[in-house]
Length: 129
Image 1 (cartoon, one colour):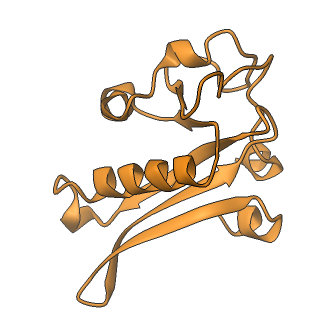
Image 2 (tube, helix red, strand yellow):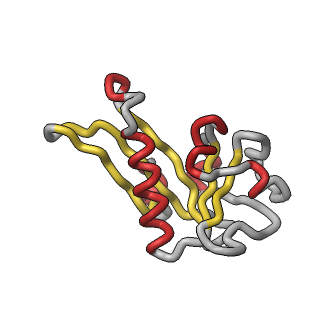
Image 3 (cartoon, helix red, strand yellow):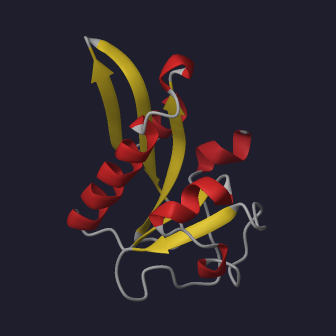
């Protein structure tokens, strides 16, 4: 996360706070390709606050903000059972080349044609994971 920020690739960071303590966080970072899309990662919720909708609220708020800010699409690498509820689908990026290709790589177009291109390329910080 720090490298994403240091490289200037962190675009949107949202936190859920309760009683002055951080309960959850989501980060959206710039993708190299498609150029008008973001990556959703990481999403984290404090262990004792999970299954209360905090993560879902963070994702929904982030997607709404990304759309308002003119981003065309969002890509996530995660649990299909969780992310499908927000509209993410592996079919959206299935024809795109990616080192993370597979059923856990999913996309969500925020605008018509928002996820078009030959590949999904994350910011350089992801290569070190």
